[in-house]
Length: 175
Image (cartoon, helix red, strand yellow):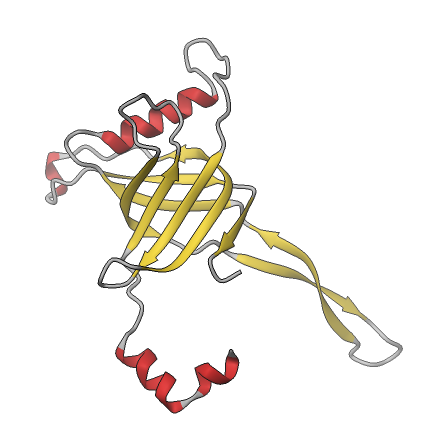
């Protein structure tokens, strides 16, 4: 695979077709708190999103008076995925998120209302709307929703808010 990326033809193709960082689509499988009118998968474009971070701890092994060696250690994930949504006038995204949060713990009774984890897919699209990279957040749930800014002085007139998903681990369509 590495040799395919290093060829001159591949390099020219990569430079003429760069991946756009603004075409993220978030797909929530079986949104919690739904009804018979709620789709099996809620699909919505995100204004902003980040590819989840993954890193490894570094283990230093000293040897006598040498610099020693380093090897990779434990896999580290942030377990957080944040994105920003723009709401439309029917408030479908905000209503789904609030229902999902109430399914986790009802704000009035303090009682959980059933399973709250689901899979969330983050698909990076090409300019034709086809998936190029799909990140699957396994066991995801909403851990935070920002306070939407409601202001006449904003100037854009767009209602948008950040949502943070917590998840167990993630996979990509390249794994």
